[in-house]
Image (tube, rainbow, N blue to C red; front, side, top):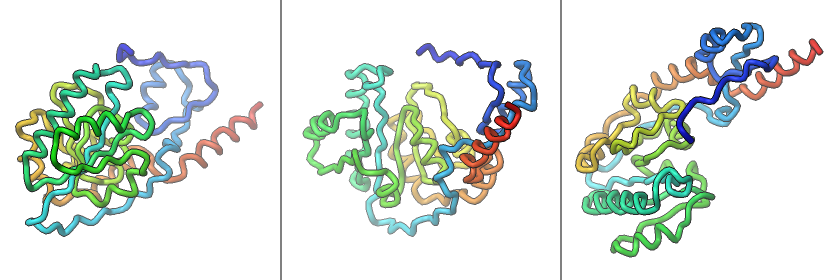
Length: 243
């Protein structure tokens, strides 16, 4: 609640680590090295890293943008009034640009589709709202993602190599795994001012991505082998041999 780090429990017999950067901090806590096992994070095993070819987009066609929302109001981070004002401001800004087409992907469980439908009554455009559909079944239909807040889906989009603009109007939310690395490689851009968003979209859409180099670094840094679940199991089984 107060953005404070949870104290590290030094009592376990085994620590399964997502990547090697955890080793030094845990050693400084007095934890023995033999208790540490770098296995990677099983949650990422389902992602098979592969190059995403850049789309040969017709420059005369509209830019298809998927807005991926974050339930900041439902999670008590923003007030409903603040969230509503922000959403309306974003939609007004984008819909004022005739060369942009947008759709919404809202949280499948935490958000109310009727909330967005009510806001969209103020606009003439027919804007699709996806909720129960998997983002991975629709994401490749879009040239770019726009999102905000902080969510695991940002990590997944970064890992998948899709172009994304993250809105940060002094929100100061933390970056989750892979996001900062994707920013450094240019696959994710940060927009600090709503007035610059549309220009950023047009400058960003035709820039070629750096997925090959990005994924090479990511695989090494985060131990992305696709076999983290198996490595966790083996580490636990090896521990049980001593009991």
